Length: 254
Image (cartoon, rainbow, N blue to C red; front, side):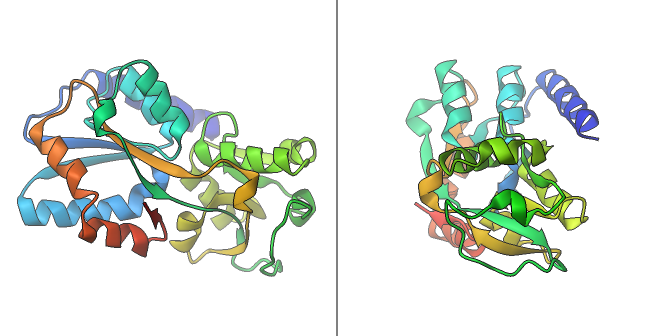
């Protein structure tokens, strides 16, 4: 299933790279964890201004690669600094427009019916033991931000060697959430905002911030695609109304 998803993602990137952006629309490529908040903000913005906003959600790594291939994104919103820096290094974003708008926290989740009780997680908590004989769902630890943060946490806690063979690697943080929702994994590492939108999972605990790099969401215009409409929508994401929506979904607003 994962291989099929990745193949579809690459295929989508190739298809998008051949499609020109319409001048009267704003194209936003955003990390999967932003889905609910940005859908609400964009719908409200379109209702107020008449501006059409097209949103595409996936893992930050997938979207960055699609932008590199020429996909018609005008705004990129990443769930970590790495993939925004990747595009900046290739001069594919407008650095002057870059803003770190949001923050998040990394939590462990379990299916709602799991016997696991909420607990205070520390560097000494045996994460592999919490999963029993099952696997731990998270984003791909080599490319998907949520998985990268989780790998950092387990590495700094001295547990990665024990946890790594138990990882159920997903193509995005929402895909990892779905694995736990369906009971295919008894434990998962996702963002607090992802856990908050699902009634099928519960939060077991929050991983200490000290175990991973700060979770920050940089937003920026894509170089060469800085239309007035795109600039206006990016600016709208910093307004009190938008900040209120982000906060409602559990993001830390910078």
